Length: 181
Image (cartoon, rainbow, N blue to C red; front, side, top):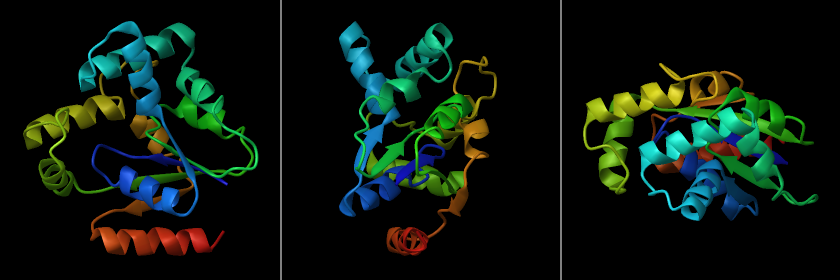
């Protein structure tokens, strides 16, 4: 089984991914692929620069570039969770993999802002307004066709979860979902 996870910043994608890792899944991350390329090129590891690099590579190599690159890490017979899908072409490329299922996870922006403030990552926005700006770009508002388009990728999900609950309740909901498979 290969589970893709798509959703906005601080919606619970990492919680779902970490839960799957505890169940034996191998985690692959689009953002880690972009970060690796940024390090190779000497580009700073900041959100805007990473997004710009991701967009540039999609424009240059095709909108499914990051999915094709990530898929090279997949070994048959293992289960994977793939986090941070940003474009519908990436979803379509991943759908060529046997057993691929896409989960869309979202949470109210005010709740996501609270979680962002609690986690305190250096690259995280510092205000609700900044969260909304990041969301707009990430979802594809004002972006070129090769740019961030997670909103369009999100609507392609096979299953949707609204994360307006505690971490434990989310884990139980995801566990129940997995048990159906």
